[in-house]
Length: 264
Ligand SMILES: Cc1cc2nc3c(=O)[nH]c(=O)nc-3n(C[C@H](O)[C@H](O)[C@H](O)COP(=O)(O)O)c2cc1C
Ligand code: SF4
Ligand code: SF4
Image (cartoon, rainbow, N blue to C red):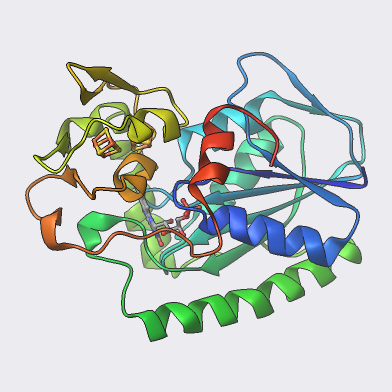
């Protein structure tokens, strides 16, 4: 396979970007990003890393993945940080981390899609979402063009103040992420279907007495909350009335494959 795209997703935005990109690149496969604990060998001419921005930086899984990558010399790397308008210095963080592992990130693009971070409110009105999908399609074509001609550019980033201030907040909050599931809870609408436990990529939910219990090794992807068919999972006190979101072209089946570590 000429290009391998590794994707991590909570609500399908990054998976949708990866699939769009794969169809532009033609000879490309899309694979869910593992969370390796030992060297992870990848054979490809080019490798793409596609993931959501979490708290102005890299999700822990992306760090784990990049730290364990083993490739043949000369492998071409590119990344897409999918976000809701504040990528901050996430791609710089990835570039530096990869450089420390002897890998060179040649391209890093930000693609803005509707927000799945429910504490910020919902994903926004439908027409605004449609506009983002349209802009994202155009940007994917540009990314594919740059990848096909093996370009190298500065990675995209937010304004300087964001990169300084938000990167600091990222550093302060990173260690707390595992325990942020303390704010997640299931209300009386829960019908014990167990989908939240099945969809969690971190195996962080156990059904205890027919209700989900969170085990404090959370990645904060919010898949459990956003994919609960009853909209029974809340984050703190305010989310009862907030609209849920997942990408309209991504299905629960796709998400279950990710959680099972299966191929896309
Ligand atoms: C815990 C968390 C933190 C987030 N932090 C940011 C952020 O710092 N900047 C941003 O633009 N979007 C942020 N988002 C929004 C996601 O990056 C965005 O909605 C993305 O498209 C989700 O992609 P996915 O569906 O592939 O998970 C955050 C989302 C979550 C769940
Ligand atoms: S997915 Fe929702 S309804 Fe199903 S067990 Fe989890 S919280 Fe309850
Ligand atoms: S518990 Fe929910 S938010 Fe945490 S990793 Fe699992 S699915 Fe994602």
